[in-house]
Length: 384
Ligand code: FES
Ligand SMILES: [Fe+2]
Image 1 (cartoon, helix red, strand yellow):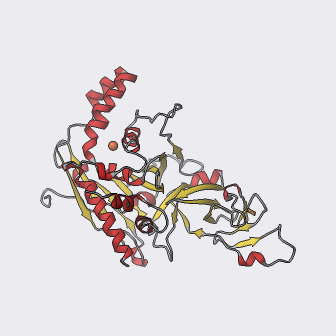
Image 2 (tube, rainbow, N blue to C red):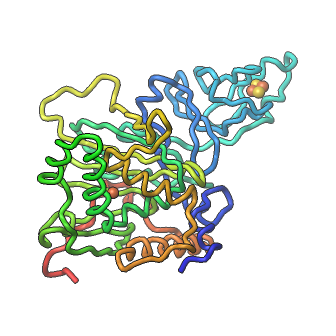
């Protein structure tokens, strides 16, 4: 049973909070590189901080506190310069390290600029995504998940901003019990009302089968969710879906073909749900303009949550729990074992970090900078 205090600890992501401090030990995606190519200065949010991300004219990425340190106008409207960005208001120039390089509105000869700085964080690009690290001190390695580093693949990313706390979105990934009902029975009901012919096809060919078993394992970098519908040879049982702590799920079937899901805590009550896919190029040329990013709106033109896709159904399920759901009001069942395990892992890791321990899935040192693959598949022999 979760107390209201534990619920706050689990869900608050701001600077100085228990979980906010833990989440700041990890790199999180904040933008697609292709978006930055089109628009070199953009406003981004991460862990409750309002920031601005830019690529300056020399190609360097910068991530700064959004409000200009002069008088708080958003640097989201700044102009890229050779080294940094120039604020749209009075033209102060800030570089990627947060140093002020110029103050054209100050008296000639003033050296005031040398004594003014703003908050700056590291940002790096990998696999067509830009990642940020908001922790203090030297950042660990940016994790080289296999899907992000494969060569000769076509990549694309779909993203939706989900108006609720990140942990609700993450917990849904540890909840195979909903698949049959939400993505089967309910999906069929939605199709009955929009496209009866499609509903028939869906029920006969696509609807998920009844679930026969599920299980959850801890591994050294996180938790593995497993389930099967037919028998225990299924990929979803043997390999399962590993969730790399704290918020990256990996689904890989073959080398060169797979998906990473990033659950990005933008603030206490907004989450960026990102699906990054890679697939073999198969002789096709790489698209111009890099890996495309598609923004998938979570609501229709009336502001109603879209439930015509599996992702939309998932988002409906978690958004309607409330912006930050009250876990103390839940009545958990046997099938909620995965999310119970994850909550405990989060609290243990956050407390451990507060006490000075290095959290799991933080990689430092030369030898640790290697490709990260899914943990080995479970076989019938080592099952149970
Ligand atoms: S507010 Fe940015 S230069 Fe004045
Ligand atoms: Fe789902």
